[in-house]
Length: 295
Ligand code: NAD
Image 1: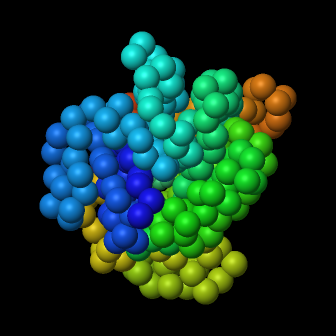
Image 2 (image 1 turned 180 degrees about the vertical axis):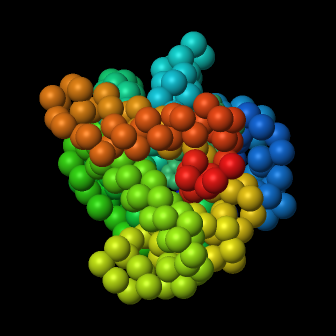
């Protein structure tokens, strides 16, 4: 039986790790937050007391951490995994981080004789729980093929974007578009409500019209429209505004370094920054709806 180490059991990591376990792989898990491991230990995973213990002597190591500094610290920092790890695991980092950080860590892995993939995901917590995530992968195709059985138990779509870092570039483009779509969806819904429409009726209409998009379809930001969306639970959980701001920052860096023009992405970045400055960084990103609601 193949063994997997999984580090980072937050909103996304915990349901992803549960799907690894359901697929009958042997699983060791670690998170800095002790309460995050409980669901996994209850489900039968082995819990360990350090990242290094989770990484040692497994076939595959998967990490799902918030941002570039977390990933760099874990792999390259003082007492980092690459200095101390035993065994030759395939390393899969599913966090959304800067493409340059992904390349830097992958190069360090290579110097250490290890194969590494950047494999950020799309599909949210619901996709992580259902095992229907989209994996957007950067790295060598041979490494992707080694990782395929693990991707398949956590996801439905597996894309090879290019070399190391390319998965992150594609993910950043996707999330910039997502921010534009969510802000646009929220403002259109509010416009309708302010002009006397029922948000559910308006959502049904736009969903079957040319304004249809993922936010309307599965992640409606207006409270009361969709039972299982974060808007139905005061925007608790899901994909945090702070993480969306991180991704929009990564898009801005990529825009500057490639001399691209992203006016709508830049506007979405300002809107999300304003929303976070009002104390909403810890809410799901669909809470951008609040920015448009009358006081
Ligand atoms: P989260 O903050 O809920 O989880 C991150 C977890 O990592 C936390 O439990 C934290 O304790 C743990 N952690 C941090 N540093 C650690 C370390 N050194 N060792 C062990 N554990 C450590 O974040 P999330 O929502 O699960 O997102 C994770 C990544 O996935 C982010 O990069 C995010 O941008 C991306 N993402 C999130 C979603 C979503 O819907 N939440 C969707 C797609 C992609």
